[in-house]
Amino acid sequence: MSDQLKYRRILLKLSGEALMGDADYGIDPKVIGRLADEILEVRRVGVEIGVVIGGGNIFRGAGLAEAGMDRVTGDHMGMLATVMNALAMQDAIEKRGGYARVMSALPIHDVAEDFIRRRAVRHIEKGRIALFAAGTGNPFFTTDSAAALRAVEIGADLLLKATKVDGVYSADPAKHADATRYDRLNYDQVIERKLAVMDTAAIALCRDHHMPVRIYDMTVPGNLMRIMRGEPIGTLVEG
Ligand code: UDP
Image (cartoon, rainbow, N blue to C red):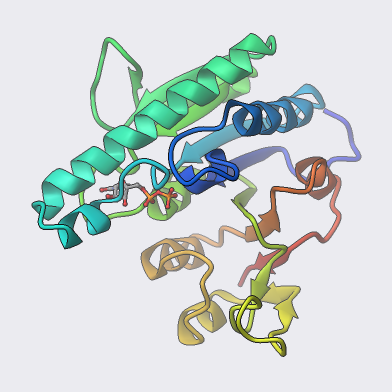
């Protein structure tokens, strides 16, 4: 691995919304292709990578429950949506000559491997991109919590949360002209100030296990590689 790299192993959280580009539903192949290119660029310089993909571009349990559906059923549908997104990412990575494995927290053996921690670590050590699907496998959780969990489980050096904004702000910058962007925060500040970083369960898990989190703008090409080289892009949350 190049000694210019700051990180050896990362967990990248991509929301489902990140995959839909300018559309309001589903997957934009151009967007997923560009993200696959960035992941492979970082892989080729030696970084080991696990990815957690959300499902909000297709279904969210909370939204389905608001519309009258049983919450647990809605969450199952949300988790299955993440499996579809992960399959699309697996396809995009392999079309570009990379190696990827979807590992699902819900067993669906004809479609994906089960998530087994030791096997996941083996995949990433061998240079495959591990795509962790179906969140935690439990209703009432989010894929942010799954990202925190998998980051800790695989011993990542950094959890990266890819977003469409360039970091964490004191208020919504679209609504408040005086909102300021933070370069650094600690976990308790995120929780106390109710900052829209990740849900509280995910942040608390990162805090308890000293997992640094960097929130960055994934719409700027090359940002992932810049972060690997140690550039302070976005907002860093740590202890
Ligand atoms: N989900 C769940 N348990 C998990 C992770 C996800 O039940 O451990 C369901 C939940 O309904 C959630 C949906 O899957 O709304 C999609 O995940 P999420 O909303 O986190 O996706 P994102 O916002 O990242 O696209």
